Image 1: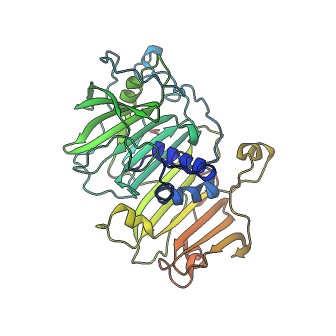
Image 2: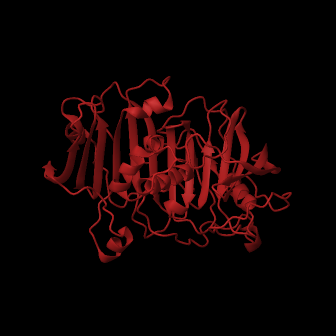
Image 3: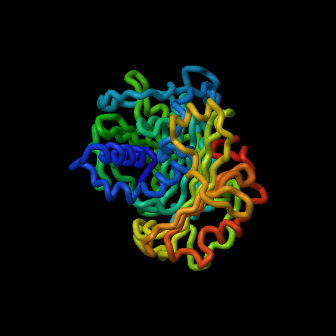
Length: 403
């Protein structure tokens, strides 16, 4: 499955290639993988790795207390450098694991379930993201924490894979290209299971992967990238892995409920993203539906979809205007719906897309975009009128850290 770091690099490649033609990057295929993420950028300005409008990295000191209370037990903050030095035998500390677990390898992924939350993170991170279901390249669950710059991704990501799926090497600057291995080494047991460190060269930058089986025939992976010379990314990865909170019953927290979706559509993905800092205002939540069967390839399931997304509506201030640096939070309105300003767009192509942004609805911007044929004759406007926005509020935040 495609993860947050990989999407960030692919999007950066698209931007660069739009200015200078490239023979290395397959732009059309990268755009297929990132098409909807780029729409979310214009809507929310809040995505972790897919958003192009974010505040610079924010240091969050003391986010979670050291496992044993001593400063030396806390790994360093993340920085933006990597040494690509081979791994040495690990002799550092390993914190005690959280007792939660997933008893059996996931045979399918329910997008409404929050399978994991962070129990510990290093300082230096600003945003969190969670996604479950079908991605353009596969089925799985991803949880990420990043520093805030999507074009120079620095952070921690966790992936859960369904039964029988083995993690692959990270992607580089093309969807079919995989990063070369720098070195591998045994890792201490993670949550009672044997584990391995693998170090990759991803576009000239370190990425460390820690892999173990969360259940028989079910793999989990923590990635850390990049880190500064002298820091030990293995220690960071081990702390994150040992303190994860797993669940198969907790539900993904959403700011509003989607109602009235045609019965022929299946929920295939849910994504929530938000700030770590108390004063951070950028969050985003999205659900995606497909008319394709679960047996279809991930790319086919993503090819014609209905997306419903929510983000905060904010009054423009000088501070927010400076953060946006000329970017837009949403499309300029060109119509109204139920008394709210809205931006509506419909492609001339009968098989094209229809998109609706409704602005300042209970403190939110609601975005609906759909391929023609996924909705009834009332289209995106009719679906908006069927949404349940009763509990919506501007100060909504995803629940991605253990309380």
